[in-house]
Length: 351
Image (tube, rainbow, N blue to C red; front, side, top):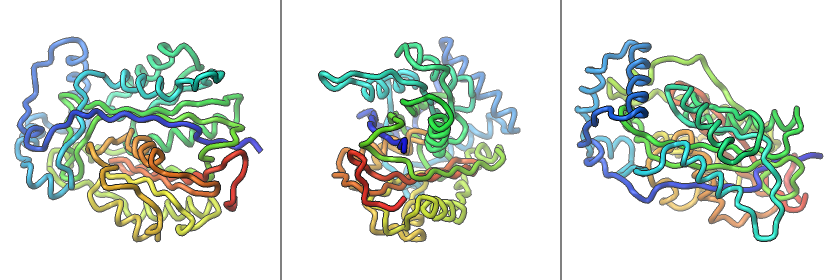
């Protein structure tokens, strides 16, 4: 059987960070330069599409205060990248991911899949094309840019489908976030956006790594409500019931139960959501890593690969260990995946 599994991962979160008071005190600079003007134009167009006045957004941003945001989000700082753009973050983690071990033969990558939360889809597509051009390998790249925290798992599902239906043997899934004006880092009173990037290498036919046992994604019709929550400063409505049902369905598809999960990758879109999912789905036995695993703010599309990489750097995996990942988007997208560790084809799990 040709297993499909994650055989390597990498991540980058900038060491520089901003406290909440510093973040809220910032004022938008003048849109100077081609990139700044382009982002400004995209932002204004998207606000207009959803019937949101820029003056209302500015007023909402000015009304935030640091103590309230810390209380509602549980965050005190957000990771902030000052030098690299989003496409450069993608390049950094992908180059690290594909760095050959001394003396090893490096096979070419078949396809690059890129995830990036951006309200202008062309930005995400151009980042994917740059990654392919810089590394000079792979066929036409793909981009997943509109599902926020569920994007990475959607890309994982797409990669598995590509491997099952084509000759693709090695696929890189990379995600990056790099927030800059005029896009806000404050999403309602739900979360604060940080910068970072993560990537994984999937191989078909591998005999060692985290094999994909099940992945499910639900994508409801898009809406413009995320804009209104930003403007009104209210928490996003998060579908806890739907998420927990999806987690349990994914476990059943993978042929296991909550008590079989060894590693649970945390996801901090909301202060209390991860704990609620853990309790309601019976995942209390699973290891989520130390408290510092969630430092840096919410990484959105890069949240899952970055947190997963950090956990795997500290975990000692044994054959048969299972890992559960979940994510969700601001507009209702839900995603979950179960992976199982195999070493030289040996697994003690049921599948």
